[in-house]
Length: 551
Image (cartoon, rainbow, N blue to C red; front, side, top):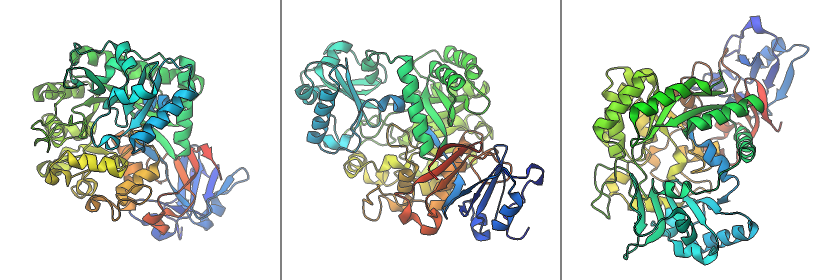
């Protein structure tokens, strides 16, 4: 058929839905070069792509026609790494993200406290190290504005926390409290807790927080899922959950339905019984899943922390301390855990921020044997730093590079705090998107929400232009590691689908693929990367069903 990009499936004609007058995005430029402007949908799948002449042949008496108004038609975004429960809870808490001045933060806390006089605890998240000069806040700052009840605010990265004196008292944290495994209670010169907590020490507070009732949790979760759909995200991969979370989501699916697809990763911890954990996870593997909307099959584990708190595991010491961070696993312990989980059929995603942690993850995957990591599509999450010798290992091993570009650019003070921790040569490898793609790695993009916003266009801006929404820094931060807009869109659609073994079903515009699609308010590729910020999603489809529509 002249002008067609793909032959339609004539057995499924006519279309239930036609999206016309758009510009279809197919990686490699095939559709753009052929001028594909129409996508036909029936039975929850794509019939084909074509031009206006094809539209006339697909149109039937019951066909709904949607005019894209010249905007991009593309696969829906897939967020490869986020934290649904934490993000949903954050919707009811104080958001400190983006506040770079201590006085502004404390004023926001004071206002929130006045608005929530009946809350037993005052809770929030999102403060940044840069607001405190690249360091950590202390309890006295919070005590000045919340002296009468416990207050606790998680850092934007969730790896550090800030408690007032009442919160420390509620958790029983004193000068005599020992540091928990893989955690650190920050103390002043006299040994008293400062109110800053690192890594697993934050769990001492979390264990004391008031329980959230199921009705509230359902309301917040549905609110979060609806917001994700409105952002053009049709599938999200939760990278930090429990079997109980999976059961909750199954109940939510059965009663209310899930507007988007979810894949839930269960946390494998190094300080617990390995076989006991895996046997419990094996039982949970199928009990909470549905065929399409809710799946598991993946385990997440932390290998290290974060650079700003000096808890990421590095090959070389930090600039201001002889320490290199603390690995959560021994090399042998990790290899054993990876091998056993792999044998039981699990896919693995390993949090690795420091270059030593990334190497530890790759070594464990390589120890599985030739082709084994690729078979399960094991993943490394974050990869904020990467040793040059490890860059070419991803492609041969078949390890997925799962990254969150906006981590690099929450705001300038934070970027400065990140760089200040590292030797310049190490910092220069920050978020090596382009280098990994050039080396043949599969790149899957996500947000890590609520660490940073889940807005895909902010992520695209960071991946392509290496800039924040306001265009700073001028010229981009480490701009040589930026990727093309087409590459970033591909990694946020097909790449994230590949990372969950779903690229044969979605993540692309192709006849037979599931109709998980979005329509944008502009021709994004035609206008170029200067138009990324401000782009709006006008339609989100999951299996051809509108879960968000403003068109």
